[in-house]
Image 1 (tube, rainbow, N blue to C red):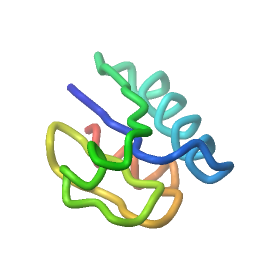
Image 2 (cartoon, rainbow, N blue to C red):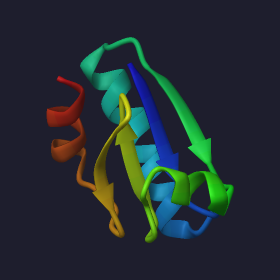
Image 3 (cartoon, helix red, strand yellow):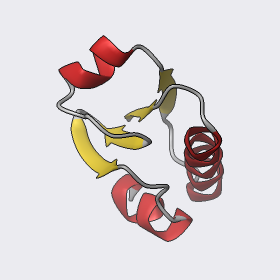
Image 4 (tube, helix red, strand yellow):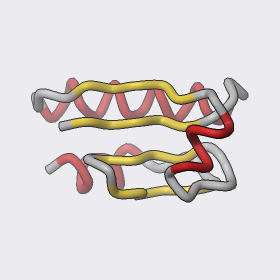
Length: 76
């Protein structure tokens, strides 16, 4: 599983990254979590508001910090 957390490094982006990491650990799934900070790369995913979470190429959340419950649904 490939997870990308997109954002420039603001507090909300760090929070989203922390929650994704925690949810992956709790679920016990194999996942690569990548922090994407380059605005051109983020826009390339069709994302124009951060934070954003992308799971296996599918944009799951844009412009807000997802809850851990939401993340768990996305990662199974």
